[in-house]
Image (cartoon, rainbow, N blue to C red; front, side, top):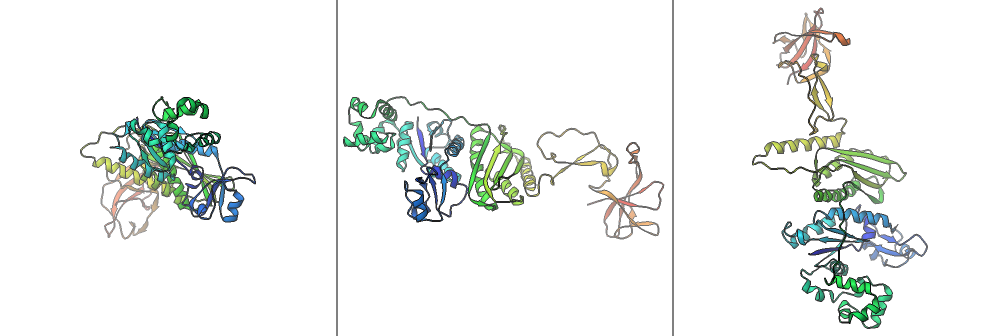
Length: 485
C-alpha cells in the first residue's frame, strides 16, 4: 500500500477565506474573550507583524483594518468532509484525520492515473482550485505520510525499507506527543525520531507511554494500522461565507465556482451526474434568495455548470448584501456508460442544442423559454400549446394525431388580424392575390368557439405569402391568420 498524506496548515482560516480573492489582512482567533489569541493568519496579516499566539487586541494595534473570525469547529468538520468527498475521485480509500488532515491510499490508483507524478499533478492543482493550501507527503504507512506532510515539504518514501531513514530527522513535536512528553524526551537529549529509535523499547514505554510507542511501530510498518474509510454521500450540501459583505456578481461566481469544484469531484468519484442545482444566498438581514438551475440532461462538466451559474447570477436581482452562498443537490443520478460510435455527429449536435437551451434558461428564465407541442384541434389558434418540459430527455407523452394541411404556415398568430379592404379585395402590403384552393374548417360548436371559415394562401406584389380566411356568411371581411417564411 502507498499513502498520500494531506496536511492543511491554514485550514481554520481557509474555511472562511477561500470564498474570494484576499485583499485584506485576515486572522482566526481561538475565542471571543479579551485574552483570545491568534491561531491562523494570512500573508497580509503576517506582513503587518501579526504572529501566531499573539493576542487579538495586539493584532488590532498592528493592523486596525484586520478582519477577525472566531474559529468554527463545525464548519471545519463540514469543510473537511467536503474535501474528502472531492478526493474520492482519486482513491477508493479516503480517511479523515480531523481537524485538518486527510489520508488517501493511492497505491491502487497509480496505474489508473499513469503513475505517481501524474496523480500528484492532478491533486495539487485541484486543491488550489478549491482554495486550499496543502502540504503533501507519500509513504507506505498512513502515520508516516501524515508525519512527513506536517514538516511542510514534499517527501516521498515508496518502500518500507526507507521508513527508518526517512523518519529519523522528524521533530518529536509533530508525532502526537503532548508537551510534557516532549519535555521529558528533551531532558534526555532526544530531539528527533532518530534519537528515540536508538533507545530500548522498555525504557521508552516508561517515558512516553505504551500508546505512543505503538503509534511509532505503526508508522514504521511494524504493527497494523487499520483506517476507517470515508463514505461518499449521495447528497451534496455546502456553503461558503463571504469575507466581505457583497452584492457583486463576480464575487458570487468566484465563491460558487469553488462549491462546484467540490461537487464535480464527488460526482466523478461516484460516477453520477446532476440535473438540478439549488442555490441559496443568505443576506445580512436574514432574508434568503433562492434560485435553481435545471439541466436538460444529467452531467458533471465543470465548464457547463459554471456557465449556467454565471448566466443565472447575471440575471438575478440581488436585493441586499450577501453574507453566505450555499449549494444543495438532492438527486445525483447514476450516469449510464456510453459506447461511442465511430460517427457521433448527431450526438454532438444534440449536446450543443441542449447546452444552448440551458443557457437561454439561465439568461432569460425557465418560464420564458418554452417548446411547442401539437394538440388535436382543427382551429389553428388552439392547435398548439407551450410546454416547459418540451426539451426534457424524458419521453414525451403520446398525443393524438392532428389534422393539419401541408399548406399551413409555421408562424400562426394568437389572434387573427382584420385586413383592410379595397374594392372588395383584401390588402396587406398591397393587394392580395389568392394562390391556393379553399380549405374549409367548421368546428367548435360544443365549446362556444364555433368557427366556419374558408382558408386560402394569398400573395402580395412583394412576393410575401399569408394565410388568410373569411367567415362563411360574411363575404366582406377577411382576416390574416399566419405568415409563411
